[in-house]
Length: 448
Ligand code: F0G
Image 1 (cartoon, rainbow, N blue to C red):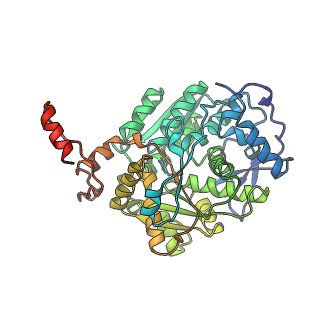
Image 2 (image 1 turned 180 degrees about the vertical axis):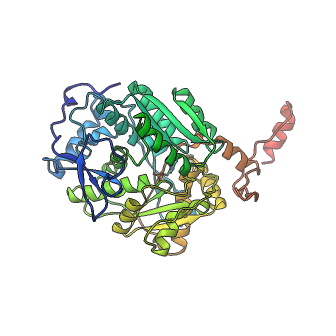
Protein backbone atom coordinates (compact mmCIF):
# COMPACT_ATOMS: atom_id res chain seq x y z
CA UNK A 1 0.00 0.00 0.00
CA UNK A 2 2.88 2.30 0.62
CA UNK A 3 3.97 4.45 -2.29
CA UNK A 4 6.80 2.78 -4.08
CA UNK A 5 8.90 3.52 -7.12
CA UNK A 6 11.03 6.31 -8.41
CA UNK A 7 8.60 9.00 -7.26
CA UNK A 8 9.54 8.41 -3.61
CA UNK A 9 12.14 11.12 -3.42
CA UNK A 10 10.54 14.55 -3.37
CA UNK A 11 12.61 16.63 -5.74
CA UNK A 12 10.42 19.61 -5.06
CA UNK A 13 11.05 19.56 -1.34
CA UNK A 14 12.42 23.00 -0.79
CA UNK A 15 11.47 25.37 1.91
CA UNK A 16 8.36 24.06 3.59
CA UNK A 17 7.46 25.86 6.78
CA UNK A 18 4.61 26.42 9.17
CA UNK A 19 3.47 30.01 9.41
CA UNK A 20 1.02 31.70 11.74
CA UNK A 21 -2.18 32.60 9.90
CA UNK A 22 -2.66 35.84 11.87
CA UNK A 23 -1.77 38.85 9.72
CA UNK A 24 -0.21 40.69 12.66
CA UNK A 25 2.03 37.77 13.68
CA UNK A 26 3.09 35.60 10.71
CA UNK A 27 5.70 33.86 12.91
CA UNK A 28 7.43 30.96 11.14
CA UNK A 29 8.25 27.51 12.50
CA UNK A 30 9.98 24.40 11.19
CA UNK A 31 7.67 22.06 9.30
CA UNK A 32 8.55 19.30 11.80
CA UNK A 33 7.58 21.20 14.94
CA UNK A 34 4.64 19.53 16.70
CA UNK A 35 2.34 22.51 17.21
CA UNK A 36 -1.30 23.12 16.38
CA UNK A 37 -1.47 26.81 17.24
CA UNK A 38 1.12 29.58 17.06
CA UNK A 39 3.18 29.43 20.28
CA UNK A 40 3.52 33.23 20.13
CA UNK A 41 -0.03 34.44 19.53
CA UNK A 42 -2.26 31.36 19.60
CA UNK A 43 -3.29 31.83 15.96
CA UNK A 44 -3.97 29.02 13.49
CA UNK A 45 -1.07 27.62 11.48
CA UNK A 46 -0.68 26.86 7.80
CA UNK A 47 1.96 25.23 5.62
CA UNK A 48 3.79 27.44 3.12
CA UNK A 49 6.24 26.52 0.36
CA UNK A 50 8.42 27.99 -2.33
CA UNK A 51 6.78 27.94 -5.73
CA UNK A 52 7.29 24.74 -7.72
CA UNK A 53 9.77 24.95 -10.58
CA UNK A 54 7.34 23.72 -13.21
CA UNK A 55 5.14 26.12 -15.14
CA UNK A 56 1.33 25.80 -15.01
CA UNK A 57 1.13 23.98 -18.38
CA UNK A 58 3.86 21.56 -17.25
CA UNK A 59 2.02 20.81 -14.01
CA UNK A 60 -1.28 20.26 -15.79
CA UNK A 61 0.34 17.83 -18.22
CA UNK A 62 2.22 16.00 -15.46
CA UNK A 63 -0.96 15.52 -13.42
CA UNK A 64 -2.96 14.38 -16.43
CA UNK A 65 -0.24 11.86 -17.38
CA UNK A 66 -0.22 10.42 -13.87
CA UNK A 67 -3.83 9.32 -14.31
CA UNK A 68 -2.56 6.57 -16.60
CA UNK A 69 0.10 5.41 -14.12
CA UNK A 70 -0.06 2.30 -11.93
CA UNK A 71 2.17 3.76 -9.22
CA UNK A 72 0.24 4.04 -5.93
CA UNK A 73 1.19 7.68 -5.42
CA UNK A 74 0.00 8.63 -8.88
CA UNK A 75 -3.25 6.69 -8.43
CA UNK A 76 -4.05 8.67 -5.30
CA UNK A 77 -6.26 11.66 -6.04
CA UNK A 78 -4.27 13.48 -3.36
CA UNK A 79 -0.63 12.60 -4.05
CA UNK A 80 -1.14 12.91 -7.81
CA UNK A 81 -1.08 16.66 -7.08
CA UNK A 82 1.94 16.43 -4.78
CA UNK A 83 3.58 19.52 -6.23
CA UNK A 84 0.83 21.50 -4.46
CA UNK A 85 1.56 19.87 -1.07
CA UNK A 86 5.35 19.39 -0.90
CA UNK A 87 5.76 19.13 2.88
CA UNK A 88 7.48 15.73 2.95
CA UNK A 89 11.17 15.16 2.16
CA UNK A 90 10.37 11.71 0.82
CA UNK A 91 7.22 9.79 -0.07
CA UNK A 92 8.18 6.31 1.15
CA UNK A 93 6.12 6.70 4.34
CA UNK A 94 2.94 7.61 2.54
CA UNK A 95 -0.05 5.33 3.00
CA UNK A 96 -2.66 5.66 0.30
CA UNK A 97 -6.01 3.89 0.03
CA UNK A 98 -6.45 5.60 -3.39
CA UNK A 99 -8.36 8.47 -1.80
CA UNK A 100 -9.80 11.25 -3.92
CA UNK A 101 -10.59 10.25 -7.50
CA UNK A 102 -14.16 11.35 -6.82
CA UNK A 103 -16.51 12.08 -9.72
CA UNK A 104 -18.28 15.18 -10.93
CA UNK A 105 -21.94 14.15 -11.34
CA UNK A 106 -24.46 16.29 -13.10
CA UNK A 107 -28.15 16.15 -12.24
CA UNK A 108 -31.02 17.89 -14.01
CA UNK A 109 -33.52 17.12 -11.23
CA UNK A 110 -31.27 18.54 -8.54
CA UNK A 111 -30.54 21.61 -10.67
CA UNK A 112 -34.24 22.23 -11.07
CA UNK A 113 -34.86 21.82 -7.35
CA UNK A 114 -32.02 24.24 -6.65
CA UNK A 115 -33.36 26.83 -9.10
CA UNK A 116 -30.46 26.42 -11.52
CA UNK A 117 -30.13 25.58 -15.21
CA UNK A 118 -27.28 23.18 -14.42
CA UNK A 119 -25.78 21.69 -11.30
CA UNK A 120 -22.79 19.45 -10.81
CA UNK A 121 -21.91 17.58 -7.63
CA UNK A 122 -18.35 16.78 -6.63
CA UNK A 123 -19.11 13.63 -4.67
CA UNK A 124 -16.57 13.12 -1.92
CA UNK A 125 -18.64 10.23 -0.61
CA UNK A 126 -16.88 8.06 -3.22
CA UNK A 127 -13.76 8.09 -1.03
CA UNK A 128 -12.43 4.84 0.58
CA UNK A 129 -14.11 5.51 3.93
CA UNK A 130 -16.98 7.42 2.38
CA UNK A 131 -16.12 11.05 3.09
CA UNK A 132 -13.80 13.93 2.13
CA UNK A 133 -11.80 13.36 5.31
CA UNK A 134 -9.71 10.75 3.48
CA UNK A 135 -8.09 13.46 1.35
CA UNK A 136 -6.73 15.09 4.48
CA UNK A 137 -6.05 11.95 6.45
CA UNK A 138 -3.52 10.46 4.05
CA UNK A 139 -1.48 13.63 4.59
CA UNK A 140 -2.02 13.76 8.35
CA UNK A 141 -0.89 10.18 8.84
CA UNK A 142 2.12 10.70 6.55
CA UNK A 143 3.19 13.62 8.74
CA UNK A 144 2.60 11.56 11.91
CA UNK A 145 4.91 8.82 10.56
CA UNK A 146 7.50 11.33 9.50
CA UNK A 147 7.53 12.78 13.02
CA UNK A 148 8.00 9.30 14.52
CA UNK A 149 4.63 9.30 16.28
CA UNK A 150 3.05 6.02 17.32
CA UNK A 151 -0.42 7.16 18.40
CA UNK A 152 -2.86 9.55 16.78
CA UNK A 153 -6.09 11.01 18.13
CA UNK A 154 -9.09 13.05 17.08
CA UNK A 155 -12.47 14.17 18.29
CA UNK A 156 -15.10 13.68 15.68
CA UNK A 157 -18.72 13.88 14.68
CA UNK A 158 -18.00 10.55 12.95
CA UNK A 159 -16.32 10.96 9.59
CA UNK A 160 -12.92 12.17 10.77
CA UNK A 161 -12.79 9.27 13.21
CA UNK A 162 -13.78 6.69 10.55
CA UNK A 163 -11.12 8.04 8.24
CA UNK A 164 -8.43 8.37 10.88
CA UNK A 165 -9.10 4.84 12.12
CA UNK A 166 -8.59 3.44 8.62
CA UNK A 167 -5.49 5.41 7.69
CA UNK A 168 -3.80 5.08 11.08
CA UNK A 169 -4.35 1.33 11.16
CA UNK A 170 -3.12 0.98 7.58
CA UNK A 171 -0.01 2.95 8.56
CA UNK A 172 0.66 0.90 11.71
CA UNK A 173 -0.24 3.74 14.05
CA UNK A 174 -2.64 3.37 16.96
CA UNK A 175 -5.84 5.37 16.42
CA UNK A 176 -7.60 6.76 19.49
CA UNK A 177 -10.90 8.44 18.83
CA UNK A 178 -13.18 10.55 20.99
CA UNK A 179 -16.80 10.91 19.99
CA UNK A 180 -19.82 12.59 21.56
CA UNK A 181 -21.78 9.81 23.25
CA UNK A 182 -25.06 9.09 21.45
CA UNK A 183 -24.53 11.78 18.84
CA UNK A 184 -22.93 10.13 15.85
CA UNK A 185 -24.48 7.82 13.31
CA UNK A 186 -24.02 4.08 13.67
CA UNK A 187 -22.49 3.81 10.21
CA UNK A 188 -19.60 6.01 11.30
CA UNK A 189 -19.19 4.45 14.74
CA UNK A 190 -19.19 1.01 13.13
CA UNK A 191 -16.36 2.04 10.81
CA UNK A 192 -14.18 3.20 13.70
CA UNK A 193 -14.67 -0.13 15.50
CA UNK A 194 -14.08 -2.19 12.38
CA UNK A 195 -10.89 -0.29 11.49
CA UNK A 196 -9.54 -1.00 14.96
CA UNK A 197 -9.66 2.35 16.70
CA UNK A 198 -9.61 2.62 20.46
CA UNK A 199 -12.99 4.33 20.77
CA UNK A 200 -13.98 6.56 23.66
CA UNK A 201 -17.53 7.86 23.85
CA UNK A 202 -17.51 11.00 25.95
CA UNK A 203 -20.59 12.45 27.59
CA UNK A 204 -20.04 15.93 26.16
CA UNK A 205 -20.47 17.70 22.84
CA UNK A 206 -17.88 18.05 20.04
CA UNK A 207 -16.60 21.44 21.18
CA UNK A 208 -16.12 20.34 24.78
CA UNK A 209 -14.36 17.14 23.73
CA UNK A 210 -11.96 19.03 21.44
CA UNK A 211 -10.72 21.03 24.43
CA UNK A 212 -10.30 17.78 26.38
CA UNK A 213 -8.42 15.99 23.60
CA UNK A 214 -6.03 18.88 23.09
CA UNK A 215 -5.02 18.60 26.74
CA UNK A 216 -4.64 14.83 26.52
CA UNK A 217 -2.64 14.98 23.29
CA UNK A 218 -0.09 17.24 24.87
CA UNK A 219 0.07 15.30 28.10
CA UNK A 220 0.42 11.88 26.47
CA UNK A 221 2.42 12.85 23.39
CA UNK A 222 -0.31 11.75 20.99
CA UNK A 223 -0.46 13.39 17.56
CA UNK A 224 -3.69 15.29 16.97
CA UNK A 225 -5.38 14.77 13.62
CA UNK A 226 -8.32 17.15 13.79
CA UNK A 227 -8.58 19.73 11.03
CA UNK A 228 -6.67 22.18 13.22
CA UNK A 229 -3.72 20.08 12.05
CA UNK A 230 -2.37 22.01 9.03
CA UNK A 231 -1.44 18.84 7.12
CA UNK A 232 -5.08 17.72 7.05
CA UNK A 233 -5.86 21.02 5.35
CA UNK A 234 -3.09 20.43 2.81
CA UNK A 235 -4.66 17.13 1.78
CA UNK A 236 -8.14 18.60 1.48
CA UNK A 237 -6.76 21.25 -0.89
CA UNK A 238 -6.49 18.56 -3.55
CA UNK A 239 -10.31 18.30 -3.71
CA UNK A 240 -10.24 21.65 -5.50
CA UNK A 241 -7.21 20.70 -7.62
CA UNK A 242 -8.91 17.52 -8.79
CA UNK A 243 -12.15 19.40 -9.50
CA UNK A 244 -10.29 21.94 -11.65
CA UNK A 245 -8.37 19.17 -13.43
CA UNK A 246 -11.71 17.44 -14.20
CA UNK A 247 -13.06 20.75 -15.55
CA UNK A 248 -9.98 21.35 -17.69
CA UNK A 249 -9.02 24.23 -15.40
CA UNK A 250 -12.14 26.31 -15.95
CA UNK A 251 -13.26 27.88 -12.68
CA UNK A 252 -16.94 27.55 -11.82
CA UNK A 253 -18.78 30.65 -10.59
CA UNK A 254 -19.57 29.07 -7.23
CA UNK A 255 -18.37 26.21 -5.06
CA UNK A 256 -20.96 25.35 -2.40
CA UNK A 257 -20.14 23.27 0.67
CA UNK A 258 -21.48 22.54 4.16
CA UNK A 259 -19.69 24.15 7.11
CA UNK A 260 -19.05 22.55 10.50
CA UNK A 261 -15.62 22.96 12.03
CA UNK A 262 -14.73 25.00 8.90
CA UNK A 263 -11.58 23.08 7.94
CA UNK A 264 -12.84 22.25 4.49
CA UNK A 265 -13.67 25.80 3.42
CA UNK A 266 -10.26 26.86 4.75
CA UNK A 267 -8.62 24.19 2.60
CA UNK A 268 -10.65 25.05 -0.49
CA UNK A 269 -9.89 28.76 -0.21
CA UNK A 270 -6.15 28.16 0.26
CA UNK A 271 -6.08 25.77 -2.70
CA UNK A 272 -7.91 28.18 -4.98
CA UNK A 273 -5.68 31.13 -4.06
CA UNK A 274 -2.54 29.05 -4.56
CA UNK A 275 -3.75 27.69 -7.91
CA UNK A 276 -4.50 31.22 -9.05
CA UNK A 277 -1.01 32.38 -7.95
CA UNK A 278 0.54 29.52 -9.93
CA UNK A 279 -1.45 30.45 -13.05
CA UNK A 280 -3.39 27.17 -13.03
CA UNK A 281 -6.74 28.99 -12.96
CA UNK A 282 -7.52 32.55 -14.00
CA UNK A 283 -10.16 33.46 -11.43
CA UNK A 284 -11.38 32.43 -7.99
CA UNK A 285 -14.80 30.80 -7.73
CA UNK A 286 -16.97 32.24 -4.99
CA UNK A 287 -17.30 30.03 -1.91
CA UNK A 288 -20.76 29.51 -0.38
CA UNK A 289 -20.78 27.87 3.05
CA UNK A 290 -24.07 26.37 4.26
CA UNK A 291 -24.75 25.71 7.93
CA UNK A 292 -27.63 24.01 9.71
CA UNK A 293 -29.87 26.57 11.42
CA UNK A 294 -29.29 25.14 14.91
CA UNK A 295 -25.49 25.10 14.52
CA UNK A 296 -24.76 28.28 12.59
CA UNK A 297 -22.17 30.36 14.47
CA UNK A 298 -20.27 31.15 11.27
CA UNK A 299 -23.43 32.36 9.54
CA UNK A 300 -24.03 34.69 12.49
CA UNK A 301 -20.45 35.95 12.47
CA UNK A 302 -20.49 36.79 8.77
CA UNK A 303 -23.99 38.28 8.65
CA UNK A 304 -23.36 40.49 11.66
CA UNK A 305 -19.86 41.32 10.43
CA UNK A 306 -18.74 40.65 14.01
CA UNK A 307 -15.11 40.84 15.01
CA UNK A 308 -15.01 37.47 16.71
CA UNK A 309 -17.04 34.31 16.52
CA UNK A 310 -19.37 33.76 19.43
CA UNK A 311 -20.03 30.10 19.98
CA UNK A 312 -23.41 28.40 19.91
CA UNK A 313 -23.32 26.68 23.30
CA UNK A 314 -25.87 23.97 22.53
CA UNK A 315 -25.67 23.26 18.79
CA UNK A 316 -28.55 21.17 17.47
CA UNK A 317 -29.11 19.47 14.14
CA UNK A 318 -29.97 16.03 12.82
CA UNK A 319 -27.08 16.51 10.38
CA UNK A 320 -24.77 15.35 13.17
CA UNK A 321 -21.63 15.74 11.03
CA UNK A 322 -21.99 19.52 11.29
CA UNK A 323 -23.33 19.72 14.83
CA UNK A 324 -20.58 22.08 15.97
CA UNK A 325 -21.03 25.32 17.89
CA UNK A 326 -17.47 26.59 18.25
CA UNK A 327 -15.61 25.93 14.99
CA UNK A 328 -11.86 26.28 15.40
CA UNK A 329 -11.00 27.34 11.85
CA UNK A 330 -13.32 30.36 11.70
CA UNK A 331 -10.53 32.95 11.14
CA UNK A 332 -9.33 31.06 8.06
CA UNK A 333 -12.88 30.44 6.86
CA UNK A 334 -13.74 34.12 7.20
CA UNK A 335 -10.67 35.06 5.18
CA UNK A 336 -11.48 32.59 2.41
CA UNK A 337 -15.16 33.50 2.12
CA UNK A 338 -14.30 37.22 2.03
CA UNK A 339 -11.41 36.86 -0.44
CA UNK A 340 -13.59 34.88 -2.82
CA UNK A 341 -16.51 37.32 -2.39
CA UNK A 342 -18.50 34.36 -1.21
CA UNK A 343 -21.41 34.01 1.15
CA UNK A 344 -22.78 32.04 4.10
CA UNK A 345 -26.33 30.73 4.37
CA UNK A 346 -28.26 28.68 6.90
CA UNK A 347 -30.98 26.10 6.28
CA UNK A 348 -33.64 24.39 8.39
CA UNK A 349 -33.91 20.72 9.28
CA UNK A 350 -36.84 20.36 6.88
CA UNK A 351 -34.89 21.97 4.03
CA UNK A 352 -31.93 19.63 4.61
CA UNK A 353 -34.15 16.55 4.78
CA UNK A 354 -36.03 17.37 1.57
CA UNK A 355 -32.90 18.33 -0.36
CA UNK A 356 -31.34 15.07 0.74
CA UNK A 357 -34.29 13.07 -0.60
CA UNK A 358 -34.04 14.94 -3.91
CA UNK A 359 -30.34 14.08 -4.20
CA UNK A 360 -31.28 10.48 -3.45
CA UNK A 361 -33.93 10.42 -6.17
CA UNK A 362 -31.33 11.58 -8.66
CA UNK A 363 -29.62 8.23 -8.02
CA UNK A 364 -26.75 10.04 -6.34
CA UNK A 365 -27.46 10.08 -2.59
CA UNK A 366 -25.49 11.63 0.26
CA UNK A 367 -25.52 11.98 4.03
CA UNK A 368 -27.57 14.72 5.73
CA UNK A 369 -24.80 17.34 6.17
CA UNK A 370 -23.96 17.13 2.46
CA UNK A 371 -27.55 17.88 1.49
CA UNK A 372 -27.27 21.28 3.17
CA UNK A 373 -25.56 22.32 -0.09
CA UNK A 374 -28.63 21.81 -2.28
CA UNK A 375 -30.92 23.29 0.37
CA UNK A 376 -28.61 26.32 0.53
CA UNK A 377 -28.49 26.65 -3.27
CA UNK A 378 -32.29 26.65 -3.42
CA UNK A 379 -32.33 29.51 -0.91
CA UNK A 380 -29.53 31.45 -2.58
CA UNK A 381 -31.09 31.26 -6.05
CA UNK A 382 -34.47 32.32 -4.62
CA UNK A 383 -32.88 35.38 -3.03
CA UNK A 384 -30.94 36.20 -6.21
CA UNK A 385 -27.46 35.73 -4.69
CA UNK A 386 -26.72 32.87 -7.10
CA UNK A 387 -27.94 33.50 -10.67
CA UNK A 388 -30.07 30.86 -12.38
CA UNK A 389 -27.52 30.40 -15.15
CA UNK A 390 -24.48 30.32 -12.82
CA UNK A 391 -21.91 27.55 -13.15
CA UNK A 392 -22.18 25.83 -9.75
CA UNK A 393 -20.35 22.89 -8.16
CA UNK A 394 -21.81 21.56 -4.90
CA UNK A 395 -19.53 19.37 -2.81
CA UNK A 396 -21.26 16.31 -1.35
CA UNK A 397 -19.09 15.51 1.63
CA UNK A 398 -20.32 12.06 2.69
CA UNK A 399 -21.79 8.81 1.40
CA UNK A 400 -25.50 7.98 1.54
CA UNK A 401 -24.86 4.90 3.73
CA UNK A 402 -23.25 6.90 6.52
CA UNK A 403 -26.61 7.50 8.18
CA UNK A 404 -29.25 4.93 7.14
CA UNK A 405 -31.31 5.50 10.28
CA UNK A 406 -32.05 9.09 9.21
CA UNK A 407 -33.13 7.86 5.77
CA UNK A 408 -35.49 5.22 7.10
CA UNK A 409 -37.11 7.67 9.46
CA UNK A 410 -37.56 10.32 6.77
CA UNK A 411 -39.21 7.96 4.31
CA UNK A 412 -41.49 6.44 6.93
CA UNK A 413 -42.59 9.75 8.42
CA UNK A 414 -40.78 9.20 11.72
CA UNK A 415 -38.06 11.87 11.50
CA UNK A 416 -38.20 14.41 14.29
CA UNK A 417 -36.26 17.67 14.51
CA UNK A 418 -34.14 18.23 17.66
CA UNK A 419 -36.97 20.45 18.93
CA UNK A 420 -39.21 17.38 18.90
CA UNK A 421 -41.29 18.66 15.96
CA UNK A 422 -42.12 16.04 13.38
CA UNK A 423 -40.60 16.66 9.94
CA UNK A 424 -42.72 16.24 6.81
CA UNK A 425 -41.63 13.44 4.52
CA UNK A 426 -42.24 15.59 1.46
CA UNK A 427 -40.59 13.07 -0.84
CA UNK A 428 -41.32 10.07 1.38
CA UNK A 429 -40.99 6.57 -0.02
CA UNK A 430 -42.10 4.14 2.65
CA UNK A 431 -41.71 0.40 2.14
CA UNK A 432 -44.99 -1.53 1.92
CA UNK A 433 -45.66 -4.74 3.82
CA UNK A 434 -47.46 -7.26 1.64
CA UNK A 435 -48.76 -10.82 2.12
CA UNK A 436 -47.08 -13.71 0.33
CA UNK A 437 -49.77 -13.65 -2.36
CA UNK A 438 -48.90 -13.09 -6.04
CA UNK A 439 -52.45 -12.14 -7.01
CA UNK A 440 -52.76 -9.39 -4.45
CA UNK A 441 -49.28 -8.07 -5.14
CA UNK A 442 -49.97 -8.06 -8.89
CA UNK A 443 -53.24 -6.18 -8.36
CA UNK A 444 -51.49 -3.65 -6.23
CA UNK A 445 -48.65 -3.09 -8.74
CA UNK A 446 -51.05 -2.85 -11.68
CA UNK A 447 -52.89 -0.13 -9.91
CA UNK A 448 -49.83 2.03 -9.39
N1 F0G B 1 -19.87 17.24 5.87
C1 F0G B 1 -19.54 16.10 6.51
C2 F0G B 1 -20.13 14.83 6.01
C3 F0G B 1 -18.67 16.14 7.62
O1 F0G B 1 -18.36 15.01 8.23
C4 F0G B 1 -18.18 17.38 8.08
C5 F0G B 1 -17.30 17.46 9.23
C6 F0G B 1 -18.55 18.53 7.36
C7 F0G B 1 -19.38 18.42 6.27
C8 F0G B 1 -18.05 19.87 7.75
O2 F0G B 1 -16.73 20.06 7.38
O3 F0G B 1 -15.79 20.62 9.60
O4 F0G B 1 -14.49 21.00 7.52
O5 F0G B 1 -16.48 22.41 8.05
N2 F0G B 1 -17.06 16.50 10.01
C9 F0G B 1 -16.09 16.54 11.09
C10 F0G B 1 -15.89 15.16 11.67
C11 F0G B 1 -16.27 17.62 12.07
O6 F0G B 1 -15.51 15.04 12.85
O7 F0G B 1 -16.07 14.18 10.96
P1 F0G B 1 -15.80 21.08 8.18
